[in-house]
Image (cartoon, rainbow, N blue to C red; front, side):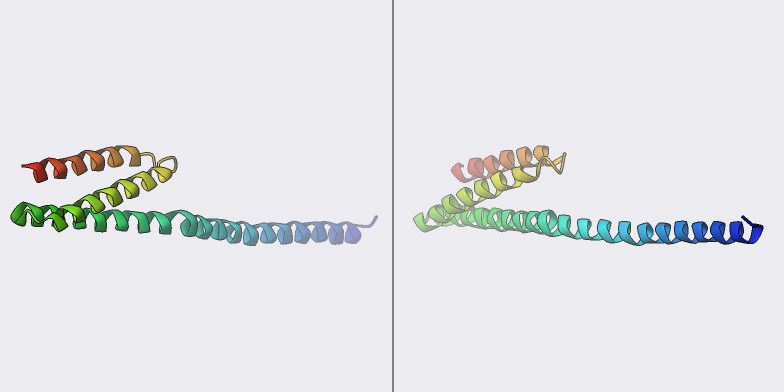
Length: 124
């Protein structure tokens, strides 16, 4: 084998390695991006929807409790009871995310305790 043939072979190997590195460099970010988009679509969006639903139900619960404390209207009491059931449902749904979000369990416990505080205020 001549020196020229060895140089051509070496440059071919170098080009092949560079093409392989380029292919991996293009594939990995694409795969990572699609994985991140999938996780966002499957986790973050439903989680956000559940948290917003919880907030809406807590506001409804508080409004019904305030109205009932002023008027002692049975319709307001029923609104409060329905909102409480919806709050409990939303809190229960949020526990499905606790394995992926480590601090969520404590927040759910605190929200459950505070939900009981509204019950106490309503009785008074």
